[in-house]
Length: 356
Ligand SMILES: *Cc1c(COP(=O)(O)O)cnc(C)c1O
Image (tube, rainbow, N blue to C red; front, side):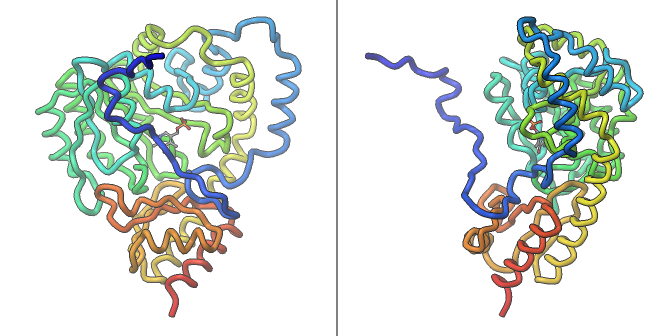
């Protein structure tokens, strides 16, 4: 038996992995620490009971897109939904990048932006941020003008650093992107935890989309639902590549039900932001270098090697993301803000590891 070879351009790639270890406190994938309220689960169960299982779902997901749009005062025509914001990103790449075209990221940033670029046949180009992980707008503009990427990615708040882009950086990159007939994608997966957003820059005549997800803020990582906000003409073009009926009826119902619990979501976000401050302050007191965060996680560099701290945390049954050997992130670890109790366990373990 012969085995067909995978595509030549995939041979050198390794898939995207987030290592899991059996532990009591999991603070490694930026999920919400608590599920949505029980009323949500009930609302979904009721909606699912009434589903027409023998019928294809509403292909245009019009009810869901209308409800999402209403959160931002935008019509459904300016909202696109998919199975997680990763699929939103993939759909954008398939439509606007692909073979013969390039994409641009500013590193370190979310690994999926370059990874999805590769698997869609686009050529990912990367420019480094400053050593403090902020982005020099002059560097960013120069890179856009020199490389003329089909898609430029900004992640704000940035994963894995937590930094929020300045307004000036976003507007200047946007202007440069317009000059090269490109598209600016601002990934706001963590937008609700941040003090500012690019959403108010959206306009029919501006080549900008903002991508969002139910996975973090809405505590629905299990549902795989994400969306983008952008110009109606662009949303229409995405229909060229998206699979028919890609969004199943259950998911549409769950996404719709979630929006009835905006207050609970906001309360969760406020609680996480408060706990984030506690984590930052106490990590600082323990001698770690701590980066500002507009997100639901904190990047820090312990005063002893990150790999060692990561392993000792596992020994304390606490899992954080080990970014210590990632390019640019030498010795750093990323901890997701958990429940108050989980954060206390993490901090006690850290004190134990770093203490005398
Ligand atoms: C978690 C995350 C996402 C979410 O992806 P989903 O497919 O919606 O779960 C998107 N972008 C960034 C930067 C993230 O960290």
